[in-house]
Image (cartoon, rainbow, N blue to C red; front, side):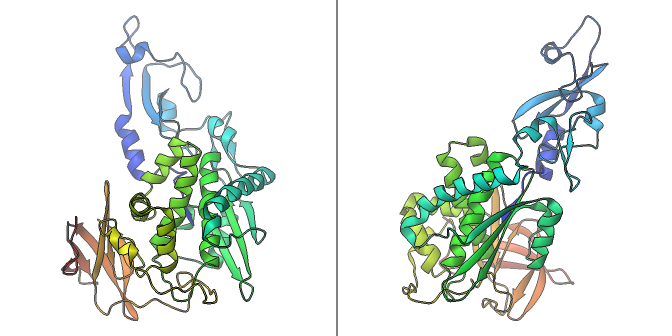
Length: 391
């Protein structure tokens, strides 16, 4: 699955709010900012009266001069998050709205979407071709609206919020080494983001075909692998805004940063080897040497439904809460507790043996994490295992 950042995250909206300023236009006297301002609002194109608001377009990374009415409008574009001009907007059949600028670059045509997917698939196949069979004719991509996307998600629900996703892959085993992959791609997303989503979802098909019954991967690591290849794809295309969007997205809980660091240190083929035969299910950016710890060769094992996709088989977890790792990637820090990663301020059910408990992460420190556990919200500090310290 591919996390959606087509809608502007709360942190970005807060930043935009902080950037929002207004100033009076006094006849004959204009401030330094006002001197550079256009005569009309850049959204509704009506003449300014007595107030001009300066707000940042997070997609194009430019500042726009808008009027008071547009600053308060609740009719906003689902891509850039800014007000959409009622005269030029496009309302999609699932209720989403695209502004005049964003509708021009949005993927809305099924035929074009499939052609783009085939182009991306060929490029990603070249990256992975030396590392075993690459899915080809068994992969079918569909362009769907938000309503149909959610329906497909609910067929095999996971732990994500489908409203935040851009892509979804369903893999069906047909016996032996034969698979059928169905990829659902959300319509109405910008083409660069759509192409990154295509790369991400195609990697899911590759992972599913190369899974062994013995290999387990944390859900965040699976998504991190797909994002890592998508990042490599858009980097090769020199699409810097999309590169930065992927790096800023916290969807993989820091795993993409760990994979990038692992490739820089050990090269691409060794990361692929770890993905297929690694002893750990989660890559710790501060203990990358663990990537060299591999299980015995499992290439002769018959493929099976990946353990991270099975609903009837659960990977073994400790009978108590254990801090298994801390990932520190720039501004974001995540703690791996049993089989679940948490950020500061986040709550989730964490598995303990065959049961689970609600855990709230209060603080992630250099070598420990402070939690609230259970309905009683008892405080608990977990430390990294002896000998496993932060660099």
